[in-house]
Every structure is written in structure tokens, then in C-alpha cells.
Image (cartoon, rainbow, N blue to C red; front, side):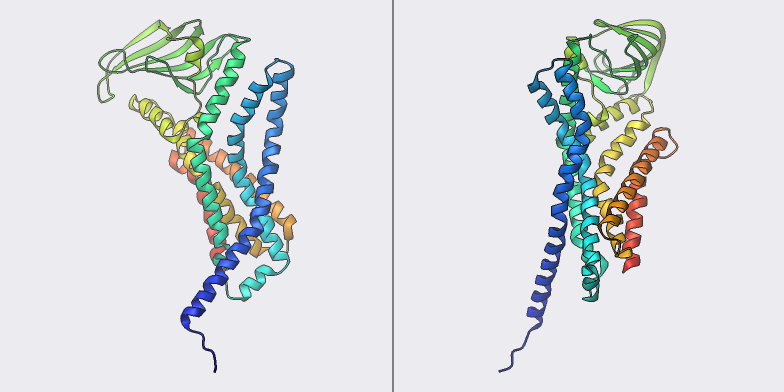
Length: 373
């Protein structure tokens, strides 16, 4: 009796083959991926470890405290290594498959480039999502704990100081921002204070210069603006000198300082809205706000661009994959830095500046995939 194969059986067989293909490609990548994560993490931590050793042997900081610093630093380093590791492992794995003619066999079997690379693109998207989640929920808090612990260490040797280009608030719900700080002379430049509880409506204090010492700031050459409930200026007055008392202990006050790396997108958005309502330009922080969403997609962008190149240069092997990885990473982060600078200085809109590198490199990758089809 002759056996017959139904359409359903053929579809099931094809589905099973596709699953085997996805699993095979991913297994080829996951080994190098974990090795790259470990290797890049060690490399990026090596310089930081030298600084920690100085704290132990020169400043006599307890080993337990230094270990806490290392633990706080680790999440930000791992998040930084993930896109690099995805790119390296993808090109190493595909370079091996290409050199052994396995990519050619897959193409001969009727599989398109996009279908072969689909599990890799899915992995890039998954890693991008994980990086975004970590940058929102884990990394800012760990960065803030690390910065505060370093400030505590510094407090034991010197009076607490103000950091420049950071946001922070005091217990009286006053928001502070200082553009430039001369720690040696305890001098500040371009100071902004947003006072939420000065009266029925907020008050904005800006000063060209100021000095911090003890529990009072000495502000000079500034303006006090009284705002209404909609954030518009209803009155203002200039001053040559103003004393601004601080609230709480210096450790508590200065421990509230936060850079953009110590804030989630929601927290950074709160500060941006606060100062934009007062008519102040904070384009550099708006760019950083959009970068907090754009940069995590580097993993997906890297595989979109890097993976199709292995079809284009299929005989290059692993070494060519390493070379491509270095070139792509270098160009991507150079483009991101240049675009951020242009956005911070008002040359490009902040949203475009934050996503420009993704658009260029991701678009080029999609073009390569279509071209290879």
C-alpha cells in the first residue's frame, strides 16, 4: 500500500525544519555571546579596578566598601557590553557558517536572507529590550548609589562639594542645577534654583556666579522671577548679592545630586519639564532623554547592519567578522557622539539627534538585507 503525505504533514515538517534552523543558528551565536559578555566586562572593568585598588591602599577604604562600589558599577558595565557582545558573536558565528559554506547551503535550500537571519534579529530585539529595562529599573539606581558612596568617601577627607551639570533637590523641594563648578575656589557659574514652596506659586532664581561654603550659598548678579500657576513670569527683580541657606546636613543635601546617568527617563523628564516651563533651554538634557530610548536599540541596529555583511563577504571568516565589528562599533558611537553634540547645541532637533545613528546604520542594514534577497 503506497503511503501518501498530506499538506498538513508537509507543513508540519516544514515548521519543524524551520524550528531546527532557528535553534541551530542561535546555538551557534549563544556560546560566543556569553564569552564576549564576560570578556568585554573584564576589559571595561580593568581600569576601574585600578581606581578601586588606590582606594584600598592609598585612602585606606575598607575592602567591603570597595566591593560595594564594584557591585554598583557592574550593571552599567554589563549593559554597555551587551550590544558589543551581540555584534561580535553574530559576526563570529555567521563568519564560521559562511566559511564552511553552510550559509550557501541554506540559500540553495530556498531560504531567503531575512528568514535565515530572523532568529538573530529576534535576539537583537530581545537584548535591546533587556538593555532598556535595565537602564530604567536597575542602572540609574546603582549609579546613584555608587556616586553617593564615592561622595561619602570624599566627605571623610574634604568638605562636600557641588558637582556640575547635575540636577538635585533639597528637602524643601527646591530644584538645583549648576552649569560649571570650580571646586578649588568653591565657585559656581550659571546657577538655577527652582523653588516650589516660596509662596503660592513657584519662584525661579538664576545667577551668573555664586560661592558655596558651609550651609549658605552666596549668589551674585542674578534674577528672581515669580511665576504664576501656568509657569509664566508675573514679576521679576534683579539682585547683585543674595544669600541662599541650605536645608539639612551637607551629606544629605549633596547626596541628592544626580547626573542623567543616575535618572530614569521619567525622572529626567520631570526635571526637563520643570525648567522648560520657566523658559530655560535644556536641549542637552532633552537629547539625553531621547538617547535613553535610542541607545538600547544599538543591539538590534548592530545585527541589522552586521549580519547581512556576512552574506556579502562570505569567504572572510571569523577575522573579517572581528574587523567588521570594530568598524561598525567605532562609526556608530562616533556618529552618536557627533549627533548628540549637534543636538545639545541646537543644530539638530533633540529627537533627531538621539536617533540619527540608529536611522543611518539601521537603514543601511535593512538596505543590505533587501539587496541580498
